[in-house]
Image (cartoon, rainbow, N blue to C red; front, side, top):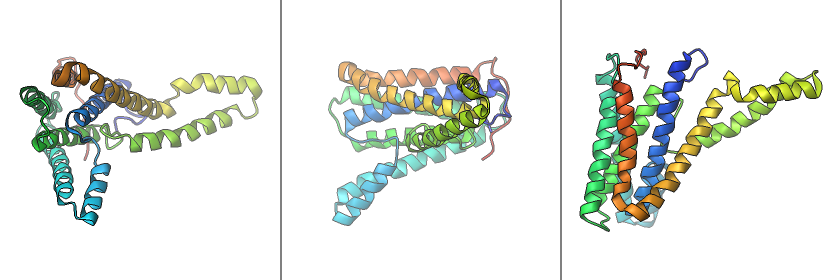
Length: 254
């Protein structure tokens, strides 16, 4: 798996960069979409809860909207997986198709919002949910199901678990060596291979928060043009994926 200690360092760095940048994109899209359209579209737990609450109270409009967002996210995941399967034998550019599709979706939604200011057209929400499902499935496949970028529940849970493991690692390594051994373990902690995934998850959380903060700030100042920023990041990833410098990697397993 890309994030296992046995993976080549260059492979782990590439997937780390991909994941952190896409977490920033997801945070930007999610928060900007909420400001523009009034709905979160990058994580589905809230929409499942809304669906259940709406069913219980007979709010059929809420049932319809939540169901549409869930279906759109699911179809995005299906689309990304199909595109990755179709390109899995390529030496490079295996991720370009879903990334370009996401660019087209976000760019189109930005243009729509620019041409019809203040719209709450449900189709725009479907498009954002589809894009987030697309992205989440992409990162899930290429990371071997280690990473998700569109929601932080699992990331924050893993950070909590890993913090305890870090304390245990420091304590066990310093046992019998006094204060000097404790200091040595603490110094080695930031570069310890055992906690590379911890550093990755901290990066994902920081990137998502940065996107959630910068997206609405820019949207309030520049409007729908803000979606050009995540599009630019996605295009950068496409260029890197297609670059001749990209080293061939084994196709990820499902």
